[in-house]
Structure formats: C-alpha cells, structure tokens
Image: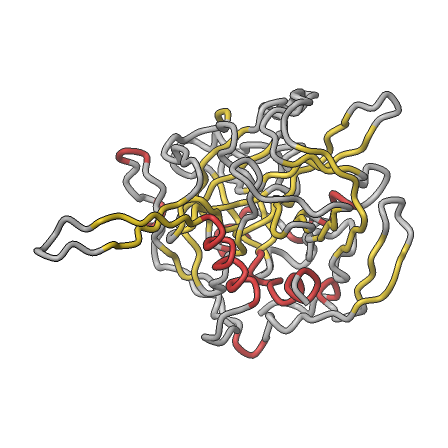
Length: 365
C-alpha cells in the first residue's frame, strides 16, 4: 500500500500570469482518482517487452496498468477528439461503376499529409510530423526566442505541458507553433502566453502532479502544420510503445538543445518495475515513490540508447491515433529522470489520463 500522499491533496487551484502573479481561483475536480478502485496489476513475466521489432512497427498492443475509475460514457476530451477528426476529413462524390444502375457515392478522405512513424531512434522528425508540438520559451531583449520546454497543443488556445516548466525564473512568456526547427524564423507562428495554470497538487521539489495548462493570447487556426493532439482516454491499459519528441539535448553532457525537432520510440515500463529503479528513500522528487499518476518509458530493447533529456520537459509521450492517422493521442508529459539514457532506468512521465477531468474543466468547461 502507498502511504498517504500530501502532494495529491485536494486544494483550490490557482492560476498565474506570465509574470508569476496569481490571477484568480478556480474549482478543482480531482475525481478521476478513486482510491476505492485503484489496484496495480502487473504481468508475471516481462514478455510484453520482447515484442518483435520486425519492420520496426509501433506495437499498439496493450498492457495492464491501473483499474479504470471511468464510466463507459464519452468524456469531453474524447468528443472533442472526434470533432478534430471530422475537421480533417474531406468528402468527394464519385460515380459507382458497380451494377447496372450506377449511383453517386461519397468517399471520405483525410486532409493531411501522412508521415512515416516506423523509423526508430533519436532522429530528426519530418516537418509537420508532430503538428501539435509547441516550443515554449521567453523573448530576449534582442527579439530572439530562447527555448525552455516543450508542450502539446490540445485546443486552439490551450497547451499541455509540465508544471515544472512554468515554475521559477524561466517560466515561459511565448509559444512557437507549427515549427520543426527553432532557428527557422519563417516557419510557424509565435504568440504570447496569456495565462498559466499549474495543478494545485504540484509542490516542488516533489514531481507529483507535474502538469500545467498554458492559455495562448491568440487562438490558432488548424492546418497541415498546426493540428491539436487528442488526450489518451483508457486508464486501465497503456500501449506497449510510444513516441517521444522534443528539442532537448541529444547527449547527456551537451550544453545546447537541438535546433531540429527529434523523435524516438520507447517501450512502456510498468510502474512496479519502474518503482524498483527509483529509490524513494533518497529522492526529493518522489518521496512517496512512483505513483499511479505517473507512467514510465525507456529504451528497453536497444540498450537504453534513447530517452528524453534536458529541454524535452513538458513535451508529449504519444501514439498515433488508431482510427485517424492524422492525429496523435498523448499518454504522458515528459517530467523527470535520473539522467539521459541511463541503463535500466526509464524516464518518468505525468500520466495524462489521471488528470482528464481537471484538464476538461478548464479547457472545455
């Protein structure tokens, strides 16, 4: 059993402006987590990590995780995802050539350019491959953009990121959208940040509830280069593999982030095995250990050569949508780790499905 965790207390939520000042109070809805139904389930063996990588296909199989506290009814975010999908679909009328009485039929097609998600391993992402990726940072005195963290566009005005990315002197004031290279000032758009809302249970230096919402000053229009991601819904199962993307450093001892957006494929590590890797008695980040509100992932099949690193914080752990190849689903938010690509040590991500109600009450009230 877990000890009672003061970092997951139900207190009033606060919001801050880009200069750090508190703006107003907003009610909190933490009902996704129902202690009475939470149970950790893990396999007897580690067979789900031995999936064949023939053709380097992303495995969409599921592994048991945490008992779901949700009902079968569709959530606001799930309905919004369906709306995003319909916006991408186009229709074309065609004449059927089958039968003696040809009829006009309607063909549905997706209005987006698809990319190859089968390539594995810490490489450059293609332009437009992750159209929901956001670069958060500050505007320097000379007008240049200083990158600090990643984020995920989930609505025209809202970005999902890590709470620690919005805390302290490097709290972002600007967001760049629709870009793949940070130095390409002709690509995408830049807007200021209107409001930052951190989860009320985030209490640094502990990394529990490491999640925040950033409201943009301007609602963005969706197109091939700018498109929102959906929120992953299931609480009781997770995919075996998921993609990470970000502009973080490409080597642990490097001093500068990558200008080009990077991507890599990781394997999901169950929370029990993940907890073994992190010694809670010596960690100020997780004094109560790995919690159900977290999800872990690492390069378990290729020698732990791929991982998120400094600068990747706030970015998504994601999978292509199973029913719409133009959209992604966000499972997690890059939170912390013991280093970058440390052997047998997965990275830790905020589990998005744990905070669905909190997100929905703010973004889609």
